[in-house]
Each structure stands twice: as structure tokens, then as C-alpha cells.
Amino acid sequence: MTVICVAGGTGQVGREVVRQAVAAGHTVSVISRKMPSPEDTAYVDGARYFSADVAAGGGMVPALEGCAVVVDCLEGKTGRALKTYVEAGSRLLAAAEAAGVAKAVSVSIINCDQNGLAFYRSKAAKERVYARSGLETIVVRATQFHSLLAGIFVVGARLGIIPVVRGARFQTMSASEAATALLEAALEGPSDERHRLRTVGGPEVRSMRDLAESWRRHTGSRGLIVQFPLPGSVGRYLQEGRNLIPEQRFGQETFEGWLAKRKDTL
Ligand SMILES: NC(=O)c1ccc[n+]([C@@H]2O[C@H](COP(=O)([O-])OP(=O)(O)OC[C@H]3O[C@@H](n4cnc5c(N)ncnc54)[C@H](OP(=O)(O)O)[C@@H]3O)[C@@H](O)[C@H]2O)c1
Image (spheres, rainbow, N blue to C red):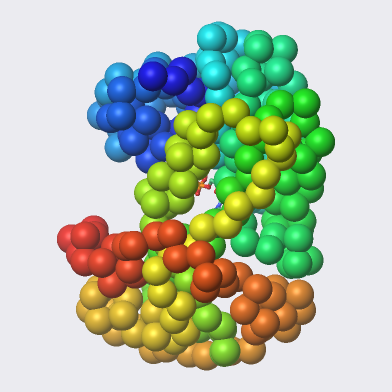
């Protein structure tokens, strides 16, 4: 059995890595700023929780001590969290190296280096930090999650519209299956290659409009589907299908299947 630290192990993907690792009998420590209570959906019985701000740099040692591998599921979308996201990755790797951890795995996004948005640029910059690390590292690039599209539709529908980027297609996957890929990478035996990059995607490529229609059917929303063009580098990223990886259909759970499981909560 392996001793694993999951940084960001209370988040959407991180908690699934924790859940699957604990279920498989591994010893798991979790780093996040807020400690979940046993009633929280993020809490996994059997994992040990440590509070530390990775971006600030301190407090990680107790969680990393004795670990063979650290899995980085941290996020930083806007403001200070976005600004410190890459630095947080560096600090985590430095703390892991100092604690004697041999390997680090990080989640990233398909072709993040081909999208000019600051959020995507931060993912690409963090990948470079991982590539330069003294640890053995694996970066797992995933396609967008089902929850991301559902979240966009939910927010729009509150205003009566379901926004769809004209011409955009997605290969969404569940955060849980992305977590499976991360855990597999974490548990692989040592490699001669110091740094590896791999990609995982969902089971289907579908137009955003089609996904919006599925979402509307499942939720009973009366929102109007409104298509709009998206200019700039994000628009190009989507129009050129750079968010897709059709040859890597790692995930099996479809958007429809994911929605069906959540029909009481959507
Ligand atoms: N959403 C998508 O479609 C998608 C697709 C592919 C890849 N990804 C990537 O997957 C990664 C995880 O995404 P997610 O949706 O699971 O994120 P999330 O739900 O926002 O979870 C982020 C986790 O990181 C922790 N965290 C954030 N800042 C921290 C800090 N300074 N120190 C310690 N812990 C910190 C959070 O806990 P606290 O807030 O309590 O600290 C939480 O546990 C991200 O890098 C994301 O870009 C997402």
C-alpha cells in the first residue's frame, strides 16, 4: 500500500482521488486551507486532514512526511489565487522534495499552452514547473469536466438564457474519472523518465448546443438556448477543437449519465 498526500484533496477532483485511494487501502493525507467536518461531502472517512496554505508556503511538512507521492489538485481561478497558483505548485514541490517524497502528479488541462487566457497560461506555467522539478513527475491533462458545462448552463438559466458558444464542441468527463487517471499515475512504479505528460478525455465529443439541450431536458429548465460567437484566443481554442482529445477516451461516464445521477440536485 502507498502513502499518498493529496494537495487540494477537498476539491472536486481531489476529494475523488482521496475517496478512491482510501477505498483501495492506501494511507492518505490531505492538504487544504479549510478542514472539512465529517458532515461535509468533501470529507472521506479514513483520510487524515491537514490545514495549510500552499501558496503561503508553510505547514505542509506534517502532511508530506512519510509520503511516497503527492497528487496536486490545487486550483486558483481568479485574483490572488490565480496570481499565486504557479508559486503554490513550486512551493508544494519544494516541500515534498525536502520531506523525501519521490514523485509528484498534477492535474492540468488539455492544450492549456494553446490558450491565451490568464487562467490557462497559469496551467501551462505550472506544467513547466513540474517539468523542471527534481522529483519524478507526471502531469495529467484532462478535458473539461461535465460540471463545468452544467455550471455555465445553471448560471445562464438564472437569467433566462442557456449560453452556447457557436461552433464549440466539448469532450467532457467526470471529475471522478479524471481522479482515477491521477491515482493510476500516482501508483505506477518508478520510471527512468523524470517527467511525463499524458492526456485523458471523456467518452464523447458533442457540440455545446447538444449538451445544452441535454441539460435542459434533464433539469426541466425553460431557459432559452442562445448561441453567440466567442472572439479571441479562447474562441479560437474552442473553434479549432484544441480542447478535444478524441483519441484518448479514458472516461466512460457520459454527460447524460452524469446528469441522470444528479437529477434530484440539478
Ligand atoms: N473544471 C474543469 O473542467 C477542469 C478540467 C481539467 C482540469 N481541471 C483542473 O483540476 C484542478 C482541480 O480543480 P477542482 O475543480 O477540483 O478545484 P476545486 O474544486 O476548486 O478544489 C481546489 C482544492 O484546492 C484547495 N486549495 C486551493 N488553494 C489552496 C491553497 N492556497 N492552499 C491549500 N489548498 C488550496 C481547495 O481547498 P481550500 O479552498 O479549503 O484551500 C480545494 O481542496 C484545477 O487545477 C483545474 O484547473 C479542471
